[in-house]
Length: 456
Image (cartoon, rainbow, N blue to C red; front, side, top):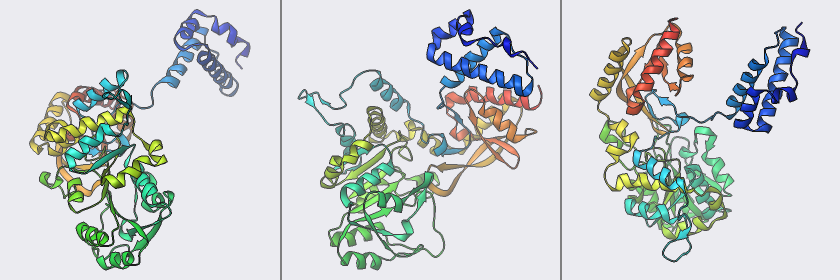
């Protein structure tokens, strides 16, 4: 049994030169907490596992390691080599260079977030993105909140709390993170009036409920991440809007993905666009900022000014409002579309539009640089709750390590971590979702993991 008397006291440890250096870096409270935790672990190891008491210099090293573990960031950049462009678990859309620079510039110091430079008096933060949203979409007004779930919740709370909202059963869906349309509607205080069946709804269903009166809103929720096939039908959006407007009932379209460009032009199924929702006559359109719009996480509401006024004034708007970094990022990203440069500047559209031969060239270059692996055909996905079941052709670098799961684990422990996927016992790396500046660290991490997997 080790001699526990060899464990130094806290006071003794804190006066050692090595620990004094740690104190200078981390301060007394955290160093003291780490020292106590390490001494407790060493005492337990000595009693339970008969482990020897280490030297004081080693204990000091353990204290530093403990502090480094406690204070290391849990959110960090990763390399997405999965081929899923809008990977929800990996933060969805990477930002353009101009968007990153705009956020960095506004984050350095003070800004006119809620200050009117013309009058020298208090201003409103909503103005910073609303003008661009109107210019880009033709909508009367726009408002930015923290995410699209918040946009839908705020809209329903402001316009339909204690009132009836008409919704088709074909759209009572649950999307990622347990976000259920019926739950959000109930949370807003609105009462659901369900029509149709799970797979079919007719224009007459809308007509009948609207004719009965006491409907405050019609909500149309785009099924962003699933697709009904087979015996399924529902009216065209414009038909629903025309019917609702005959009864003077506004239509809110929860569009979700926020596409401004036509995905069909890139060999994918057509994803409904913001412009199409407005052209169909929707009174308000809600969508995400970090999906097919390609910007930072945000929820965006555009449409009629008279409907947006109570939304902006609602108490919940303050709880869900966007900060200066989000507003700056959204605005900078919108400018790419206004300047007709989204395909060349917005990373997700660069990835979607990347020609197959360019993907193949990158995969072949990786293979040549590494000296191992196979270049083979594969599939990429848009992801992020957009274009369900849709895939696009790609070319991957395929490796066959002895233990694929252990190999992936090694890649996740790299700096920066590399996220790839396993398919048919092969580890696949898709160039489509790897940013150009990430290629060198990617290849270095693959080499190290490969050597470790083969005992080199």
